[in-house]
Image (cartoon, rainbow, N blue to C red):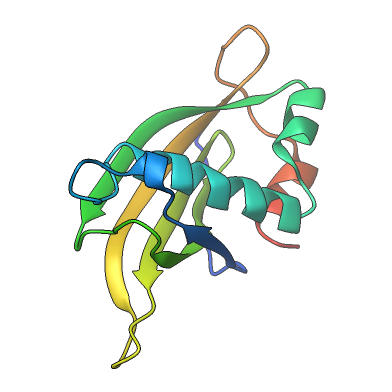
Length: 145
C-alpha cells in the first residue's frame, strides 16, 4: 500500500516567545538547544488551534514520534528578545507529518530579522510503537478542515 502525500497550505499559527535569562549563555545569546523546545511550543499551539491537542492524539491511541529535526540558525537570539515563531503543517501523509518553523525578531528599523528556520518530521505509531495509519478524521483536522 502506498502512502498518499499532500503538500498543503494550512493555517499557520504565530507564537510569541521572550528569550529568558536561563536560556542564554555567558554572552546572553540563546543556546542552540532551546530552538527545538521553542518549535515544540509552536507545534503544541498549532495542534490546539486545529482542534487536535496532542493529548487527544494520544487518547486515540497514537503517538507522533519525532523522526527528524533540522534547524538553520541565521542570527543570534539574545536575552529578552521578543520573538515570533510561525508554525505550519507542511506535509501530511497517512503515517507521517512535517512541520516547518520560522523564527523572527522584530526590528524597529525595518523588516523583522529572520533568526532561524527549521522543520520536524514525525511518524505516527500505535501504543506498541509500530507505524500506524492516522484516522481520516485526524488527517482532516491536521489539514485544517
